[in-house]
Length: 85
Image (tube, rainbow, N blue to C red):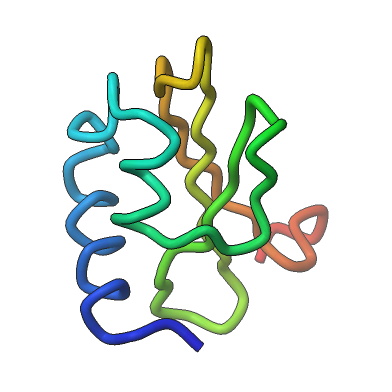
């Protein structure tokens, strides 16, 4: 389970659309958000963001090039998406 400070930081990043993470190194991102289950050898890292409803899940995807963040993307997955819920 994440610490409250990490939870608050993820909420702040979500509000900023992740712009503050662009150009940070993998080590800096790891210190800010934690390592979670991300692999240092991967160019795409994923973090689960806090959400308000049980059915909606939000994720932050970070894309790296040369060990620096070049892109941030937020994705919302919904359980039972094909049913329009």
